[in-house]
Image (tube, rainbow, N blue to C red; front, side, top):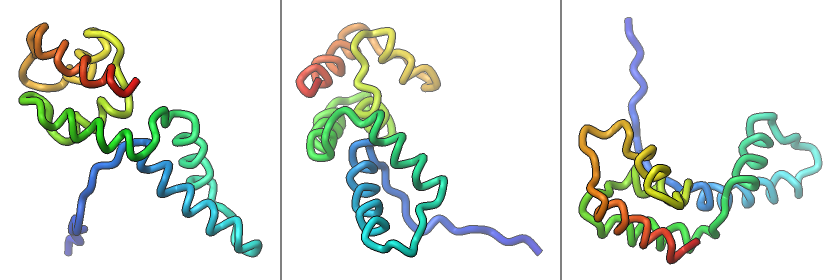
Length: 118
């Protein structure tokens, strides 16, 4: 007998959005003195606090602007919003596993959108 886990729902989040959600959880746990924070949760909170550079609203706007471009899909837009690449080489690293490469103009278009939020 094989047990399969069904994926009920999937939603992409930027690090800034995760930070917003985890801060709510952290505040809930802080109010309840009897509940300890699990190690994994504490590490996740530490991670998002360290690496989230934009606030959640800005990151949503950035993802929305990136999705308007032709060669940017949703997972890639979220990855770009988390990394905020500064040059073509950093952006090429995001696209390294794709089956296509972007032209210099396409890379510049993406970098121009990212530069508005950085």
